[in-house]
Length: 437
Image (cartoon, helix red, strand yellow):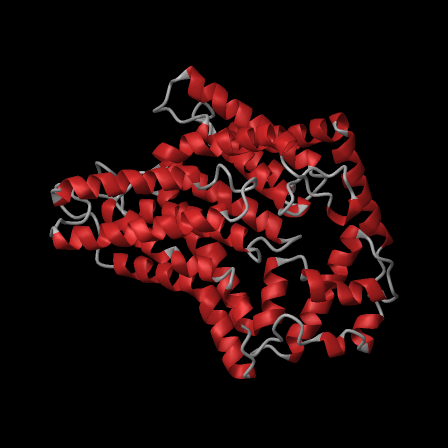
């Protein structure tokens, strides 16, 4: 088979894998890891085939679009994707404490490096498949729920989720894909009513599943995302009008949701009561929001004891009854992070892997976000850039109240999406000589 045809078929296979990756993420155990590994293998094959055929990068363009400092962004993304594994390696080296299980989830970001390089080299248009598969993720998850073993996490059978996904993760992922559909819906290049209806159902399914999960994780992103949606409407050309309408839209929608949903109203009221009841100098009872405040304070204390080496998963257990902890955290809160983390991505990684874990977390969040913002500001593949911005805001909002990448499947899903979007943007526009470097 000619090399060019092999390339084309391999690229089709890669797009097919990427398109299927998010659809069954919440319903088939191991699905995201499988699709990430397949995508990485196909990417390596494409890189090797492309090298053998001596094709130029971005062959659909008349001349290269990459400026002299483009290598900075490429290497920064490679370092970013490798940083979760490097953080653990450095931390464990300092402590002389080797636990191989700790690499399970972070390894997914490392595996995504070939995918990032392939999409960058070949300028693959990932949103051509994701504009269909993102809405299908919520719709198919909703359709399959009656046929799956549900979670029943923490003994609460009223919180909807699947057997291998906790309700916090289930709620924030379904909300994220629902909000992504809101921005895909406005793609000017696609005028199919079937596609638009599909995305509207995707929005509804994502928000509905998030509410039914009983989880507040990521909800803080909703008004922010709605404000961004208002600000990016082309018919709002006057800045003051755009900001005013966007604020009204975000806050108004949040108030309507609060008044119309008993679940939202109950969970918001509980949060307010927990914050009001929290005491800073005396021991607190275990409540959802109150415990998270205590976890943040506990994490800051443990980090201050070992900022360079970190503690690993449970190395700090001999300090859970230190006076600095017991003065505000009850026995349940003291022991809870040993099994379930600190319910904050930054805090958990800072305690477990010291400054290296904190730096790695910041890189994985903010380097892609900088790429997305820079591309959007320069009007390069604005639809792709906006999808990336929304995704990272949702992940950031969720990371404040739970770990978003400590599970293998969540790390695989985010690694696949972030690496693909960044590769697509750094490869530059299809018909312009601009890039974001």
